Structure formats: structure tokens, C-alpha cells
Length: 357
Ligand code: IPM
Ligand code: MG
Image (tube, rainbow, N blue to C red; front, side, top):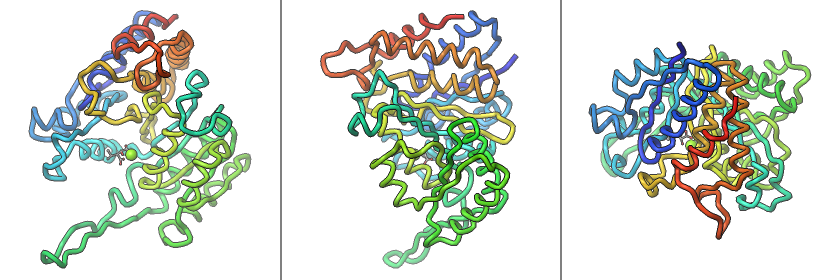
């Protein structure tokens, strides 16, 4: 029986993962699937219980499970504690311990929510971009790194480092993704300034030779940020480093105006993955039943497709979400002014009711 580790985390994490679990249970009923779910704390919640954001019990469940669904981590309560014990450290630990190097972050504009974007409708209508972000290397994990020296004259430093095999494997992920889509890949770097980017570009070009059908282009990160808000529809798949991808994916998610709708996947080389909503822990609305669970529910659809190769379940979830939106059901983040607003649980119920076998 496939096991899904549920790591609710902090803030609105538990509320949104609860709704996703209801969806998984309904899939079991409808499709005679046999997904079992097992829960462990992560992030600040784990720190409170075990004194560590990624305790051994959580890590070992994550390792043994077939897939992981994570809510969100972090909150003001844990901002002042030692860096090694902060909730974010759990995310980074899971990524590197499980070798989840390929982070897929789609930015899709749902036609029903076209008005939610801050950009003009003609700039974003039909938007469908996939950002492939390298997730276990680069400046996030590179050494040496430290703050050192005497007070008043200290220095802080990090190292942006990529090896050829690291670049090769993420490039292959991105080219394969492009092959399933519009066959256009833009690699984003800073090759005009950084040696690490020069190598990145060279290796991406080399890998590209195995994908002659994919049209490969290159863009510097600063220009890519500008192009992403100027004319986002020029992109199909974007591949980039850990830090550039962090920045670009936040910008891309905002183009859609509905960060509460966007799922993500972080995959290893065997298709095992951790799935999570793109939005964070939103401590300001936590525990109030206001959060939109759709990004987490759509993350389950990505899981069904990428880890379990279960197109039937994936398509059923996506159809149910589409129908829910078409029926005008809205949480606060995606409601137009004057529209009726439903709670997190009501939104979950609406999707579960619309799931059909
Ligand atoms: C993200 C987040 C994380 C990152 C933080 C919370 C460590 O911003 O997943 O994009 O920087 O990768
Ligand atoms: Mg980020």
C-alpha cells in the first residue's frame, strides 16, 4: 500500500493539509486506491514538541514514505531562535536528505480568476509557465559559508557552487519537461558576471544537444525578472539555479494573482517527491478557517501524476477543482469584492463533493 507522509507544519499548514487528506480518502473510496497517510510534525511545530524542526521521527517517515505532502513551515514565533533550529531549516534538510533536486513550480492563470492578477488581463490571460528550479545546490548549500571576525569588522560569506553533474541532471529534468509542453526552454543565469553561471550555461547547451526538438534560449536573471512582468507569456519552461529560482518563482506566482492556487513538486531522480503549496504559513490568518486549501489539493494531483503515475486520480482532482471554481466557490484570497466567501473546510467539502469516479 502506498504511504503518503503528511507533514502539516505551521500556520495555515495543518488546516490546508487536513482538506488534502479528505481528498485522498475520497480517492480511496472512488477509485479503490489504497493510499495510507501518516502524520508527523515539521518546522516550528516539531521544534515545540521535540526541540528540533526536523526530528528523526519525521525524517525517517519522510524517507520511508512513497511521497510527502507538506503544508508550510515558519512563523514569527521562531524567527529569533538559532539559525540551525529555525523552521526553514526543516525544509532545507528534507530537500538535501532526500536529494529532491528538481523543483517544479507551475504558474498558471485559472481563467475563472483572471481578475485576480495585478497585471492587465491581456498580459496574463492564458498564462502557463513552468519554472524548474535546482533545489539542492548553489548558494543555499555551498561552502565555505560563515560570519566571522571581530565585532565591528566581521565578514559574512556564502559560496555559489555547481558541479557539472548537478547542472546536467537539472537540465535533463527541464528538457524532459519542455518535451511534454511547448518545447521551449529558457535557462536563466548571470553568465556575464559569474563563473558558476558560465559553467551552467555551457553544460545546459551540451545537454540540449540530446533534445534537438527543444528550442533553447538563455537570459540573465535581471532581464528575466523584467521580462517576467513585462511579457510573461513568452516563457514556456524556465530552468535556473536554487536562488534565482527562489526569486523568479515568487514573482511568477504573483502574476497569477492567486498564490493560494499554486502547487509545487520537489523530485529526486526516481520520481519520489515532496509536494507542497507555493504559499507560505500565512501566520496572520492561521487557525481562522480563512486559508485556501486548493494549492495543497492541487499538490496532491501533482503527486498522483508524478510519483504514482496515476493520471486517473490526478485528472479527477483537477476536474473537481475546476468545477468548484466554475460554481463560484471562493475563499477570501480569490473572491472578488462582494462575492460570498467560504471557509477552508467548506472549500475542502466543495472539492470532495465534486470528485467523481
Ligand atoms: C521557498 C522558500 C524557501 C526557500 C525558504 C522558506 C527556505 O522561500 O521554498 O521558495 O528559500 O527555498
Ligand atoms: Mg521562496
